[in-house]
Image (cartoon, rainbow over the protein chains, first blue to last red):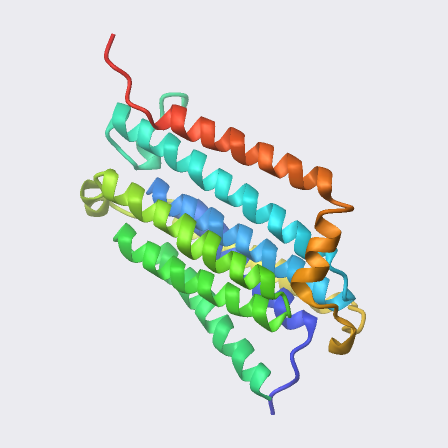
Length: 103
Length: 166
C-alpha cells in the first residue's frame, strides 16, 4: 500500500514547507514569528538540495546546504539584533506599527 | 518499509511543526514548535544519507538559532504583542496566494520527469567525502562564508549595543 520513497516525495515535502513559510511571512504581524518563518523557508531549500544531492549521488548539494545554513545563522543573528534595536527605539515588535516610510 | 514509515513520521513533524509555528499566539510556543519542525528536517537529512548535515542541523539550528530566538523573546516584551491581533487584515488574500503557490509547485513537480535515484551502495562515506570536496574545490566559498559570519557577528554586536543618550 505504501509506495517506496522517491525523490518526488522529498520535493513535495520541501514545496509544502516553503508554502508554509511564505504564508507565515505574509500573514503574521509579529516580527519574531516572521523571522522564524524565514528559517522555515531556508529549511525547505535545504531539504530540496539534500534530496537532489542524494538523487545524483553527488556531494556538492550538501556543500550548498552547509553554506545556506551559515547564511541562515548570520541572517537570524543580524535580524534579531535589528529587532532588539528596533524594540529599544520604538517599543514595538508589530510590523504594521513600523510605517514611517509608508505613505 | 521502515524508511517509508520514518519518512512520513518526519514529514508530519516538519509540516505540523511549521503550521503550529506560524499559528501560535505566544512567541515562546512558536519557538518550541519551530524546534519540532527543525528536528523533523534533521531526520529527513538522516534519511537522505547526509549524516554530517544531520549533526550540523542539530547543533546549529536546534542548539543555536532557536536558542537565539528564545533569548530575544525573553529580552523583548512580547506580552503586549500577544494581546493584539496576530494576523494581517488581508489574510484571505494571503491564504489564496499560499494555495496558488502550493498548487503551482505541486503541478510543476507532478509534470516534472525526475531521473532515477542512484543506488545507496554508490554513496561515499558522508563526512569524509564532504570534507574532501569542501576543502579542495570549494575552499574559496568556505572562506567567504567565514567572512559572512564575521561581518554578521560584528554587525549584530554593533546593532545590539546600548548607546548613551546624547
